[in-house]
Image (cartoon, rainbow, N blue to C red; front, side, top):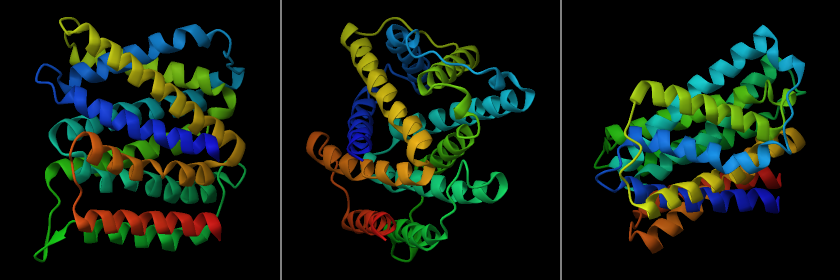
Length: 283
């Protein structure tokens, strides 16, 4: 439990750091996506040898197809996330980001009916709190009887959906890898595909910017290791619930460091969502 809370802290810190970097005029979304995954690969090189594990079952045609799906979902999710983060305030995007764990939980429940309870816990009591939390998100965006879903918030919602699809689908094949191996191969694939599509210029930035990107990448490695080890040890739903403390920390950090004060409705909606999550944990 304490490790997952640490993962939430890492998520909050990275959101702030990535926003600061993406605010720079010279840092395009395409450039950052390629540089970010290249930095993750570099950050993992010292440890990949010691944690390498790849089962022969990973090469089964069905599992290769699942891995390709994971990569496609991840490429789309990251690009949508970075695009919305560059264009909109963090406080405006956090309600959409909070949907990611809710999407993950609901997808895990659906997958439990399809693939069984060995990989996914089947816990229907999560459905009602998830619906309440989603309603709180809609409430937070209502002003003068009109929905305030601008295009960046909608993009962020789709990013959360694709991240959830990626994570839940990953559980189907995660047993055939070590978490380190899986994340390394995932990031190598995303880097190659993103570089082939975007072809950005990688040089020409300040050295401290490269250093910040490497720091962010190292934190992402730790965060994803927490996620994957949690999935293998405690299940998708429990791990997801514990990680959802991250959005609250993002609000706090954005308020402190970016002077990005959330609106009252957004604060209330976040508290309702967290209350729903705590209800599931404690009951």
